[in-house]
Structures are given as C-alpha cells and as structure tokens.
Length: 209
Image (cartoon, rainbow, N blue to C red):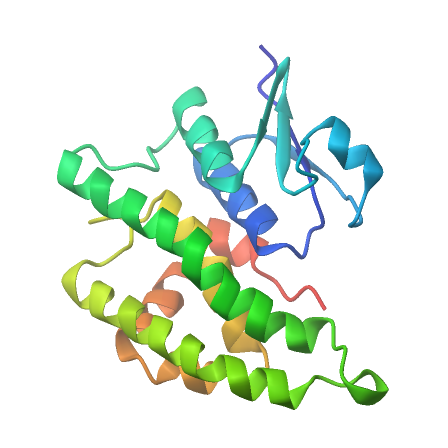
C-alpha cells in the first residue's frame, strides 16, 4: 500500500492540524488537499460532511480520533499511544473530553468568535464571548488539575490526546484575552509551551488568520 496519505480539510481547522501533527510525529508523508466548507464534494468522502478525512490507498477514514489511531497503528515510527491499560484509558478519556467539551468551549464558542466574527459591522460579538468565558475558564481548570497528575493527556509522554488538544489551546492563547486565560492555569501554560518546542508541533501550529 502507498505510504502517502491524502488529508482533506481546511488548513486552519484545529482537527486537521491534529492529524498533521500525528503524521509529522510518525514521519508519514502526507498531502493536504484544501476543502472550503461547506462542500458537497466532501459528502463523497464523509457522509456527515465533516472534516478531516484521510485517504490512504483504498482506505478512507473520517473522525479525527479514528484517523489519528489509524495513522499510529498503520505506520512505523514512535508510538502515539501508551502501552498500559490505565494510561490507555487516561488517553481515551481525554480524547473524548477534547471532542465533547474542549472543542465546543475553546474553539466553537470562543476562538471562532474572533476568527470569523459575526457581530455588528463584522466585529466579534462581545456578548457571546463574555457568555462563553466561564465555560472556557472551567474547562481550563479541569485541564490544569489533570496536568498536575500526569505530564500529558496521553500519560507519561505525548500522544494522540495531546495532539488533539494542543491545537485548541494554541488557538485559544492566540486570540484577544485568550493568553491570559491559558496563563491563569500554570500547568496548562507550561504544557503548551513544552509541546510547542517539539518540531512537529512548531511546524504545524503557525497562525492561520
């Protein structure tokens, strides 16, 4: 099977960036095919019409966590998953938390208000931003407590959960007021700084707008 992966989605997507980081960490050759959303053509790859999607030979995979697991299991290179069952459970727990809670609070309710403003005169809607902030603060607090227990959301070393969560936190600290929110949780701030020193993360997580 071809060792090259084709990744479909907009380059600014935090989840697209997660898949790119996993590819970089594993040394997987990948090609990003930009897709503007919404896209009818995407339905041919994912019936739910969401990104990212990867195509690897005859295999098509959608849903970010599934894609990252596929990359980890299919290709040689450093493992992106722990071995012990307790660490695997920890990682899976935080993968779920990223998808169910962090993405909604950090990205959809907060970051996107700045990235794609829909307020009056094309400005960010400050009412929505203020309404979202308590949830952002609460989830950062939960993340901070977790990072006091373990160095990473994947256990003793970075893995899939971290590469799903890091792009969200990176975007959060780039928007107005976001860095202060991240820095209010010292463990989270250190965590982001440490991961951004990794070549794969530094390469992928550049500003998108």
